[in-house]
Length: 445
Image 1 (cartoon, rainbow, N blue to C red):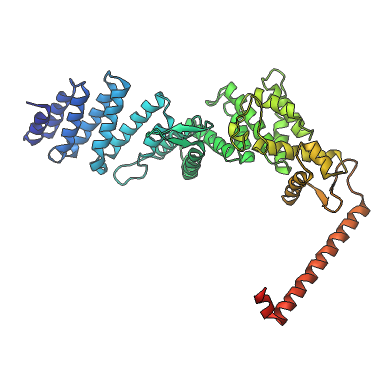
Image 2 (image 1 turned 180 degrees about the vertical axis):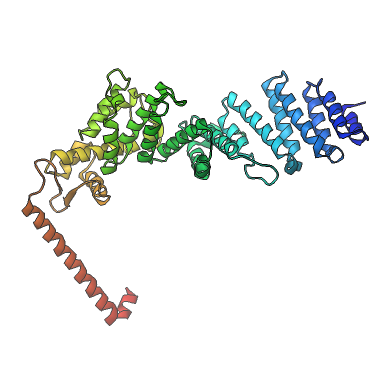
């Protein structure tokens, strides 16, 4: 009698349900051939209406354990697990828990092979909201964090292979991770798993970093750099230093201004950065220049790119996808803009005023217009205290150099601004009168 006929015979017999499970289990135990195993699970599910869920569910659970434990190649195991997923789909509502277990084992197989995007895709298929079974908050958090870790694995590479051998851009993975973080943020507070909470914070830091939210990323990295320092389970000493290095890098990349200054003050007080034996000499040197508003020469930035404990992601070094040499960064990249803004802020501490052409030369920019653009943006965002005189092509720093503008100069500039505002208001009044007096003229125009 064939395996399929034997299963059909058991299902249609009148023996008690526990005995049916025992017989089906005896049929499964000697099987180690991929074809026979696929026939077995397909036949059991086909006879499920006769067997009833009270028998079919434990039989399927036993089958999953069997194919995970048997000695076979990873390729054969993947075929068996994928086949189990396929045959469970039509009756998924009855076998949600078993299907979830299959997905977890298949994801583990992919993780062992370094196929992180496939593992994330499989895990995302697990239903975390269900009316058929009770799902704990810890389980939801554990699966979500596992998905996050796979999505963010090697995320700085240009592209990753997915199941169909197509490329999945890193930016798409970051967006998926950010969406999952937002959905899991409330659940993580209910979790009793400290390791899951730790991985969640790290995922937040990496997503903030990738999304160029450097102040938030730096705060998360700095928080993680203290985790486990008091002896509790958590991050080891080397990884804590890597997180501290990442926090310094985020301070370098963050927009120059008061908010970054507060982050730098916290980092500058940290004895681990100052410690000459602490393993962060380049981070210490960089932090000193940032905190004391010293100019950053290109060679110092290059040395930091090459030697920092936690490397700056490649996406922050390029702007148009150019091929870069070791330690190089592309013009108008995130790092280039950050260094330019920092040097502009440093210049405001050294000069009372400076022409835009000289400022452009100091900042390594191609033209005075580019220097004016940087200054205007920072002034508008209240990150730089200065006044621009476009007529003479000069920027006046407030509080810079030997004390900035004197009182008379400030009053003159205020009067000039007030007169310009008055003229603009008068022009607006004239336009309003024309609209009322000659509406047809306004329509024609």
